Amino acid sequence: MRLTFFPTGFRLVSDGLRRFWTEAKSIDPDRTEELVYVSMRRTILSLVLLCLWPISTAVGHELSTSYSQIRVAGTNVDIAFTINATEMHNGPQVDIDQDGRVTEAELDASFDALSRAVLDNYQVSIPGSDPIAPDSVEYTFVADNVIRIDLSYIFSEPANDLNVFSSLDEVTQPDHRHLLQIGEGSAARHTVLDQSGPLIEIDYTMGIPQWVTVWEFALLGIKHIVTGYDHLAFLVGLLLVTTTMRSLLKIVTAFTLGHSVTLALATLGVVAIPSRLIESLIALSIAYVAVENFLGRRLAHRWVITFLFGLVHGFGFSNVLQDLGLSSGRLAVSLFSFNAGVEIGQLIFVTVVFPGLYYLARSRWKEQVMSSASVIIMCMGFYWFIQRAIFG
Image 1 (tube, rainbow, N blue to C red):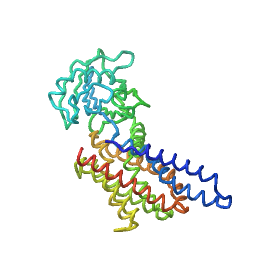
Image 2: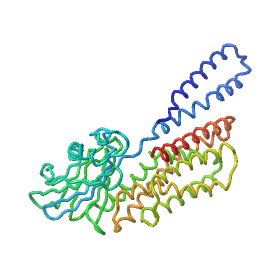
Image 3: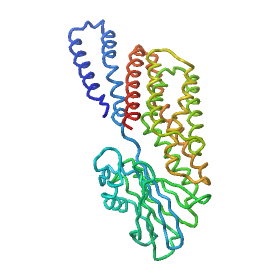
Image 4: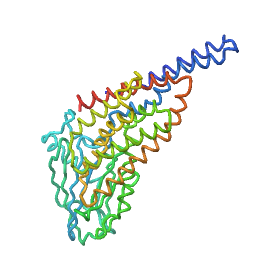
């Protein structure tokens, strides 16, 4: 299922322009201002629809992520590689009956093709030599559809330096990111490989420099919020009725505090809530804010509601770090960097969007913008809720 607002918006724009030119032929010059007002009123809904179309059509497009943990002992390199088998959108079809659930029988039947796709696009080598094939490949289920592939390599010389290359975006989807961990415990370091940075050269005796971890996880946080269409829809819903800098500051601060608390609690393992429940609640929070906007009524101060829903969204943000299984020694650095990235991405979005909404809130089209945008966001929220709560 997918929302498709674009054809509707395009048709409304076309009808609006057609009516504009028809009326323009007979309009009295003294009524020019009236014509502009009528035309804008007719097309304001379509413009809002067109602006939100990219969000609506990307509804089911979640970020694709895989993970690996590398351990080195002399010439031996052991890798625990984890991936969701249903994310091989441009690779082998593991979910043979396409029911959204990979069974052991389906995995057994398709594992050779899956392992070839992984090894062709995830390569480990030492400087001055070509990537080698692993000496052993074993697999096991670690969660629904999530498979851990254990790879064991034996090099001809000690693997003090390693090159790790990932082109997994070619068999999954363009925004795929691979989260990589070198070492264990307090010596563990983390980094992210993706389409823009597919290769890392590691001095294993030194590990990954800490500044690389900070930088990569900050970028990961920025990407997560900027491509998190549900979180952005929630922010738009909040900003629609934010008309002063004071109220903007309260809203942004409340959301930041809320999601920072639960992001930390969930990542540290203090609180654990099923992902499906969290994602469903995030969808309901979007719908609720839109309904409040449309009805013009508040059950509580908006900043209070924002803080409470921020707690929910924080659990959603934490899924990225929880799935990685960060070691306790480097958890604080990764958590802080990721959260800083989320805040930077949020600030960028608010800086870009708020001035336009602020202007519209003081224009003659305020009511049209408010009602149209609120209805659209409300429908998106309920659609996401049904998609996540019922269809998983």
